[in-house]
Amino acid sequence: MGIDRDKYAHGTTGHGRLTIAEARRRINAAELGRYDLDTEMGAWLHVLLSRHVNGAVKMMGGAAAYWIRPAVRGKGRSTWIERRDGTLEVWSWVKAARGKEQSPGAILNAAMRRAVEPSIQRWRNANPRPFDGELHVDHHGVPFAVLREEYLCMLPTPRVVGARDGIGVELHPDDAEAWVQYHDERATLRWLPAVVNMRNVQKISRHLINAYAE
Image 1 (tube, rainbow, N blue to C red):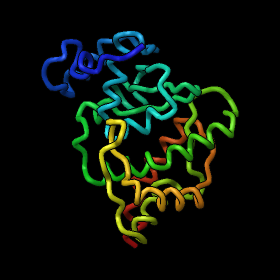
Image 2: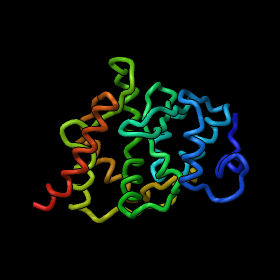
Image 3: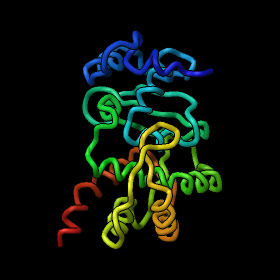
Image 4: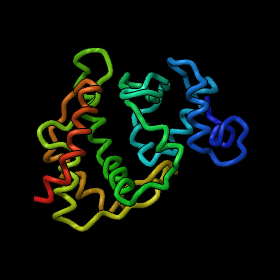
């Protein structure tokens, strides 16, 4: 079933700019649970994620459904994408509501993640999930953030362009190949429970700046 982006991009009416307050109202008013793409809420969440600066990466592999769940930390609610391969990943509805107006660093990070997502998807296909549940593909040993920063320290910053599919951003084709090769030669991937992976990401974010300032 096709999704009418004009209808759902700014709420059910299609009028006015989507605000964080409006997104919060809709998400809080919805029942917790799973929403297929052919439901109104599922279609709205799908278009909302397409506004996220990293939406294209989250959607790679294809969306099967969306979930609204209690927040991973603290109060409130969280939004998840369920891909066709059964993997689930949380995404920030706040960032999605803000649209593509993110910091240059966040935009570059999104483009660099998108460039290596085909490599990660090939790894997913070649390595069956070891058990059911919410699993992420984790960069083991050397985290993605460290690979990214090491690459940026050695080579010119890759150029970022609008994605050809109209969703999000991507690296310029002339710059993407070198980054993907660098990543694939050094990355060690593994399955990791989603909650554990998110804790690891938080620790890396706190310590990365200090590590490179030494």
